[in-house]
Length: 299
Picture 1: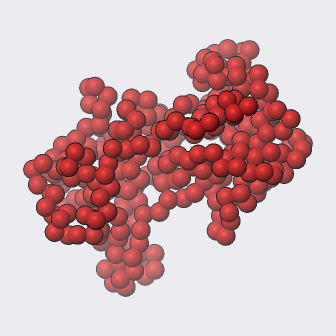
Picture 2: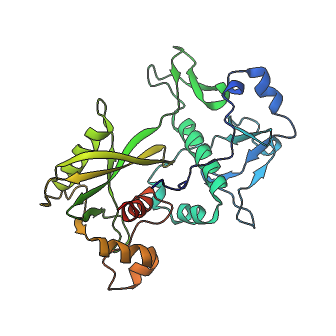
Picture 3: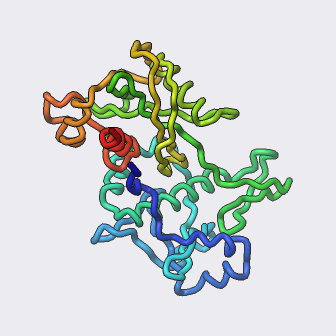
């Protein structure tokens, strides 16, 4: 079963890499037809119809750093770098979750590109090599050091998020920051020198004390908080004995197919209100939600 397009994927932007590296072509797009994404800090400005708000380049501050997002219908689309980057876990902000519910898929994906980019710029104004100031180049897809000429590029951090199955049951966990009853797939960053399969095995063992095998790739999701690529995987546990790392998880449990069917049918809000539903599943904007749907449909 192929997963549907997940949240933050499927942007209508033509990224137009050939324009990024062509100063003349880029300057030619910065005219009255160009569009400037409206942002309140890092938050999107949403119109009355639930659409992304756009203005013109005249709306940008005179000294603003402008990032070239790409082309939509042949028009250059830009976003201004805010004065400060994100300072905490954005997904804990209720306004972020509201925006994810309101925006259409294409708009949400465009916002995700912009947020990840301008947040990176706001947090990388100084060179990691020598400490001197950096300047935006290549339309905002690079920063160059003003002193040592080091080049810096927007980063994407790979994160494995995985289903773990044993005897027809799935292992799900909850972190302390989760809402009551909420469980999700285990997840963790891929470390230097690891394959995806090795990262899955290490993270599951570290968090739950379970050894896994037969790791399979399922799908991915860009997640701009701050800039991650969630790599959805499936694996098989060698046994079901749990040793939970309580610094990572508050709880981890095995759930039957019936448990997951009832939770997914009820939805997150319904499961939280119904004592008979064993857990609240991840919301549809999360790849974990689609991994559960994939698992239910795969047999």
